Image (cartoon, rainbow, N blue to C red; front, top):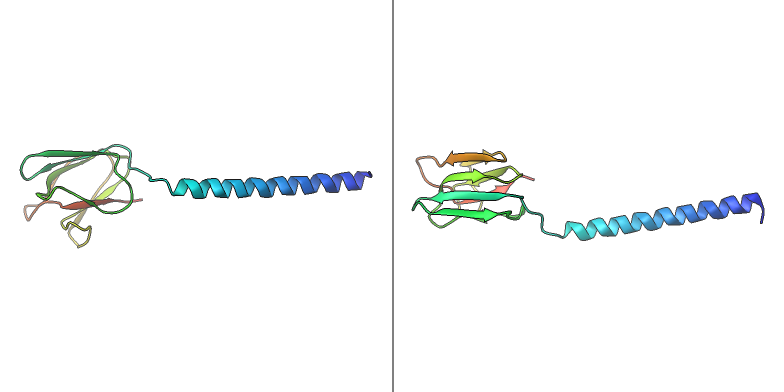
Length: 120
């Protein structure tokens, strides 16, 4: 085998190895993206009936409904910012942005918070 043939075979093996590595990385990332990501840490709130509710590491996806009585005070102990809503389905204009690890956010006098979602 000549030097040129050896270099060409080595180059093909490297290209094949690179393509295989890229394919495996793509598959691994696609598989991991299906896993449920969570907002590490607790979301704790006090209802209008003075009941404390805490959810540890909720999913970062979707809208999270609060107790039917709503929340008067909210603590975001997670590593992800969140938005509080006055509706049970995370819609509407009366919202408040709660940065990560902020405590003691009080609801406005017009009513409690009823749902939240994470900013990601």
